[in-house]
View 1 (cartoon, helix red, strand yellow):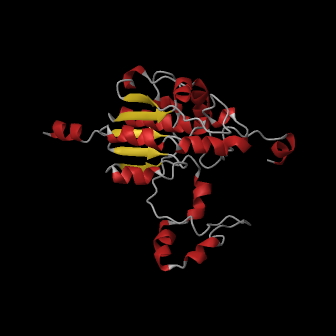
View 2 (cartoon, rainbow, N blue to C red):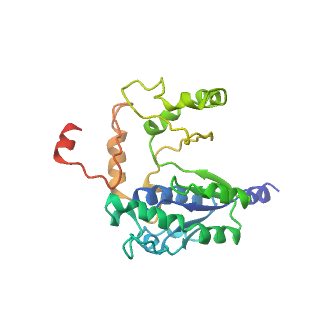
View 3 (cartoon, helix red, strand yellow):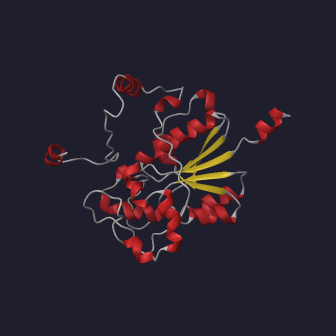
Length: 247
């Protein structure tokens, strides 16, 4: 009886990252972790990007399926481009337009599958509504670090927002201890539970161990608590010499 209940709890999870390798890899590592727990994963992206990703470990290959959705052509987007790494920053909006046009084929896939949960990135603003209409649970997986999300405030602050005028949220939060001009605009308010997942090291993929992570982990293990500061600048950011010196 317990075994039947355990089997019943296994999920079919669709994963839909933004078209950037700084997003693909965390989403893939999360998928590997979930597959190790016995859940089925449908990792959805465009054909070229799926081909460039690392292969799934043999022991997880039966649980992780790559689902290719061809990227629709968009005027202004160069042919064969399917990720931000292939574009100058000024052309990324065209890639977002093409990404938005994946809504019909993605909706069709979800309609014709037994997906229980959908894990999505920050770009497809239309996707939670699609999932709700289809009766699928959805969750936003943020790859941005806690210092960015800190501007949302504590759970207590979030719960109090029902009693606040929206205009009160368009100024810098009082708990930010440094000069800043970052604040919400009127159209950016929402309330969702947040679950921190921490780092997702590549060692989850038993088929392709990341030797660089092994070395880094050994180095970190020798450090005392709170003695190392981790700073993420983004996968595709290139600092100038002056910026690197300042940093």
